[in-house]
Length: 119
Figure 1: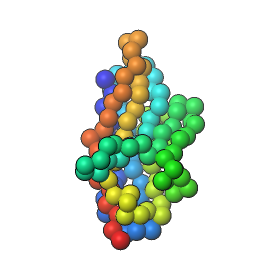
Figure 2: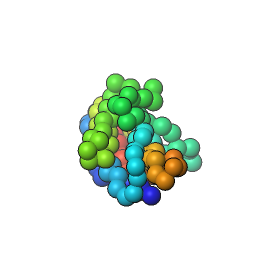
Figure 3: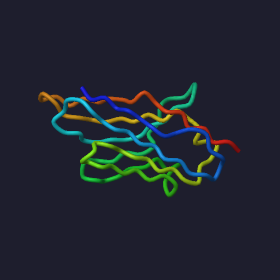
Figure 4: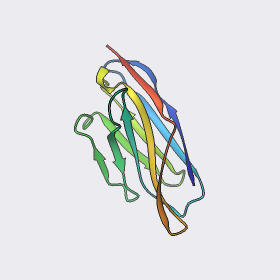
């Protein structure tokens, strides 16, 4: 299994910037896609950004131009740099990774980290 440990997050004023990181560890042959999702109480978890093992990225329309996802394959770490933050970006942010091990593709999730943007 893959364990994901997130760091970063916290409280920031609207218009500010914040960075998240997520490191993967455990037993796996290969990590495929990695990504960030977010969830607010009472709503479904939604995609924020994903990045493939080849470096292709995908963003939710609501964060395009403001958030940047990147990854360090050597460190098995994915990052999310958030700028021009808005109060509506407030949520618990979850890291996710799809990995291949023992002829099976599985997905792991981090524990989540709170991001709060004050107006």
